[in-house]
Amino acid sequence: MAELHLKSWRFRAEREADWRRLETLLAKAEKGGPAKLRSDEILEIPLLYRQALSSLSVARSISLDQSLTDYLETLCTRSYFFVYGARARLPERLAKFFRQDWPQAVQALWRETVVATVLAVVSTVVGYVLVRRDPDWFHSFMDPGMASGRDPTATTAYLRETLYGKPDSAIEGLTGLASFLFTHNAQIAIFAFALGFMFCLPTAALVAMNFGALGAFMALFVSRGLGFEAAGWLSIHGTTELFAIILASAAGFHIGWAVAFPGDRMRVDAAGDAGRRGATAMAGVVVMLFAAGLLEGYGRQLIQNDLARYAVAAAMLAGWLAYFYWPRPVTR
Amino acid sequence: MSSEGATGRLKGLRPRGKPAAPSDGWRELVTPEGVDLRLKVGAYVERFVALLLDFLILLGALVAFSILALIVAWATKASWVTEALGVVWLLGVFVIRNFYFLIFEIQPRAATPGKRVMGLRVVAADGGRLTADAVFARNAMREVEVVLPLTFFLARGDGVDAVLVTLGAIWTGTFVLFPLFNRDRRRLGDLAAGTIVVKSPRKLLQPDLADTERAAAQGVSFSHAQLDVYGIKELHVLEEVLRGGERKAIAEVASRIRAKIGWDGAADIPDRTFLNAYYAGLRGRLESRMLFGRRRRDKFDVD
Picture 1 (tube, rainbow over the protein chains, first blue to last red):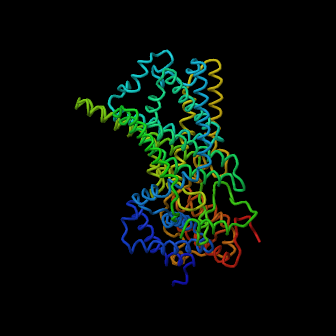
Picture 2 (cartoon, rainbow over the protein chains, first blue to last red):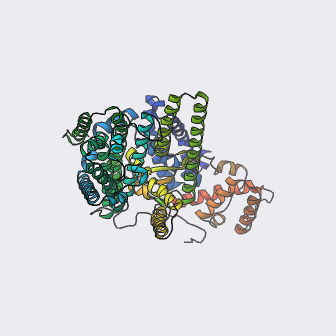
Picture 3 (cartoon, each protein chain N blue to C red):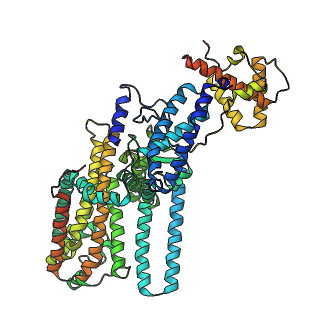
């Protein structure tokens, strides 16, 4: 009596077992990751997926059972994302990030990095010159919380003390200081990146403000004859931290520029590409700021010799530059 | 197969010069095998609730984490423990704040717990694979979309400051409302990462209602004229009624169909049996006509 059945009914009856098999395999894979599947099950999924896809297109043309087509659509979508989704394990992905993705992303941002560096240098010089001319400018660059007493009214002895003394931070201990500095700076860097979307301008303002404060700070110490010492105090972590901030701003500029001037591509596509490339660089920036936080929290407090501070600073900068810009074979 | 292959085919298959989206809220995704999966873009309400749920979970995690740290600090009282706890707390808060979304969205299901509850997932807009950097980008943008308006919202100012704060709030507000003004309801982060949020429901395979063999055994049959009264739309409504299983609705629909088709067979057939049989008959009729190229949309679609 099989002839009495509808074609769509028979179609479903013949294939239902395979669909259910695919569904159980997917559920298993989604629960514990592909590692949970045996190798023959892994091989089975693409076959079952293609079968389900062909069932879906047949069902759309011959069956009017709404629940069947809905079911097949969701099943195919789920397995599509499994079959064509990423499957690299975390250690592999991390290794690839450090070996290839991060330096490549930074290299791709070289133009924005140059712009951000120029902007940073100019703001530092402006901050410096303004405060040297008239110390009152200091207060427009630094807010009192950040300066924490290091302003033009402070004595030279006090200023010297801040360069070599114990941190007068609310968080006791060096580890606490390091982790506070890291989380604070990383949050600001992520913010600078995200702000880039608004056509670069807010990021540029953030860079100008921060580096202007740097210039003002230097001007204050130079005016007391403490320039060399202050530069050492700053640069031991500063070469890493300021470089990281410049890279974060460069990533922000990259995305803002892509949004404003997408060229011959769709604005959406350009923004997406730029955002992904910038995000890779940003993930690296967080790593850099972690290193900078360690240097600032530990290194600066433990190393009190100026020349040693300069040596660490130079070594870090050379290390970062070599890591990012050393020509390397392109592997895909 | 690589994602480039997938997208390359996707572009190649799309007819040029035609709008890509057939209707609102749907997005086509043609697999390399050439089948359109028709993704449904997540609704505003669903996404908002998902975000709210995630924030609640985050808040709960932060509070629980802080209380735990306080209890340990209070119980041990050693100074180095307090310092270590301070470090753990700072780093923990940083990780929870920045990596909660990232960690869940790079997994195979590509959804945070809030999104899972609402049946949503993140996909790459070009149909390729969702990469970790895309997930990082879409969540880094949250700083601008959520934190920035919040700071303006919570900031207080007088005189010129108040004007500036208001302007800032308006400026950042435009970015919050971004998803309202584009086709795929993408927020800023989605744009920066090239992702969209789509529905990813899990449907169960329900039993086939069109068991014609049983209908024939029960002795209910319809003439072609009786089956030609309705089209596909009505068939789907009938399917919903039958699957819903509501006695009142079934009785009402059964009586309406009986009147409409001029049912003159046995009057003592239960409503459910009658509707089942009519569904099977109608589907068979429509499907066989579909095979000959006639797809009857609804009852008004008369040839």
